[in-house]
Length: 630
Image 1 (cartoon, rainbow, N blue to C red):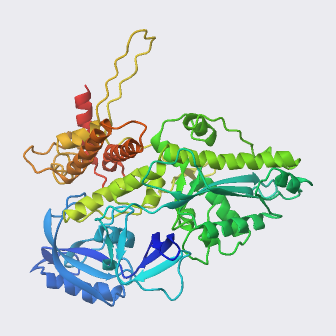
Image 2 (cartoon, rainbow, N blue to C red):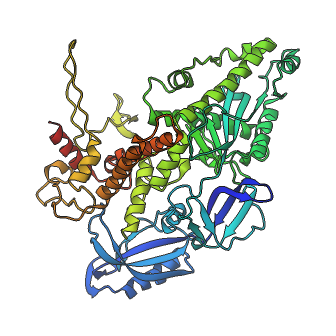
């Protein structure tokens, strides 16, 4: 089951409201590669040719029975393969088996008497839905034969169930504009409890933009329409006696809560009422959400799952110091989380990415801050406490304006539509995943079997046994030393020290690695990555060679060329426009998205945790890069 969250127009309300479509019956799809000869029970090959009926019978009689797969469908199909598993033919026939995702997942290293490999065991239901229905980023969907669920499974205003993925179709005609989004910029003020040594929430502020256009340039003046502010007091502290009177005089709308539990209950209730599509904050993905969820859990706040849009009773297991772990991400399921700290790290260069520095560099504003140690002193007078709330509201405004200035949301939308992944993941960085999905869509369209995603556990530190003077053996744990690079990287010249009082000429290659991949047609489908028998497999640079020049263009160079040409076309359109116009800004956002995607494509070749990791290809690209640089 996959939950698809979005917005839909409701005539009676004359507005767009949140909706959730629950897609059921997404089947697992596996591909079994038949052996040439059958294996005997002892593992030796016997002189008996394998037919597709033999593979089917082994799955039906042995595997389906062992894994309690009661119902499945199978057919003969032709697929292509061009990746790192050895011994797989480039073109071959496979037995394609489909069965319910409710049944167990088969081991990725499974082999049988009649088949040598099985592909697709680790493919998630979400990935299958995106590839099967060709869903490439946010867009309008046509939903056929929707049914109303008996019990609501989400907090959305509207909810529907479809019985199979075929009932969802992306709308490519009509050029419809995306719906307006509700954006909530959140700032959280915390204090470390000296007794429990845990962060506790003292104040939460939020600025709300009710009509944010994700495909347009960010607003220049009207940053938000309304706000909320809630405050409580630390343990063993009291509010100043005239605090509420001061708030009335200054016409501040502040919810004064007697306890932290009341404050958190108010925040959850506001989320229910506002139903924001986007939560914006600085360091929200690694700190603010983590603290809020831990305190909501500790204070036993009902309906905690309103932090997201999926109804749940049991809080996911939270871990202290998880730095935005899986539980924190799933708790906000159905809402986009925009962390301006993460976005800034990708889009600009800065000495520091704390809010003070970002406000100074991007907004040209000096931010006033209060340290956690000084926070208790703000409860000494009403004016000091009001000042703290104003600074917290200002932090919300700075965060919102940074998102606007960097065009984070429009840029994330463009990148996601190019790569075909999830916008929620794009906003949290993850270039590797974006590249993976772009290649997944490209290779799937060419009828290739894509590499399975591996979920490797972190290696434990090495343990060594050391004998002491008494002969007793002590086991000590040592961390592994830093690994040597798997292959030679780019050319780095030692700087020549000295004072230069004349002009220095700076030469920069235009997208060096993407250009090399295109020029030399470097791809999984073109480069031979099987080493000669007398060569060391690990010493890839000694044997990997460029492909023949007369080969058909590979999938990777074609994808990069598309990105580069589309960017060139967009830049041509920009030339005749005024630099201050909205149209120019929209084109600029698009060309940046294309540039970021094209320049990061090389990364999936050399990143060892990527499913498209190919060390020979990465080494070949860097080798040619060093060659052309000298």
